[in-house]
Image 1 (cartoon, rainbow, N blue to C red):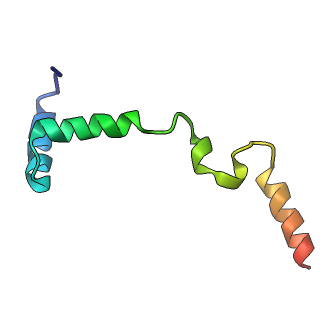
Image 2 (cartoon, rainbow, N blue to C red):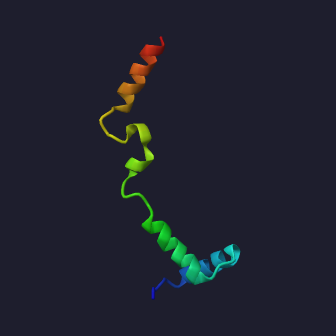
Image 3 (cartoon, rainbow, N blue to C red):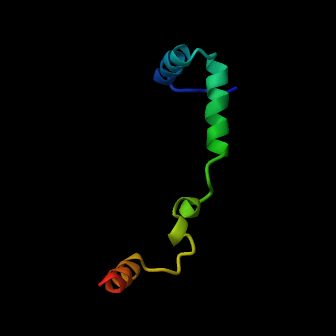
Length: 67
C-alpha cells in the first residue's frame, strides 16, 4: 500500500486511462522502471566511462591529427 498526495491519484488515473492499464499496473511499471535505472551515469557515456580522458584534451588532439 502506498500513500500519494491528493493531486497525484488523478494524474495516475488519467495516465492509466490513456495507456489502457489499471492504476495498479501503471504504478508497478513505474517501480520496475525505477529499479532498472543505472546506479550511475557511467553506463551512458561510452567513450568517457573510464573517467581517465579529458574531453577537451581529446578534442584538441583529434583536431591536430586531422590537420
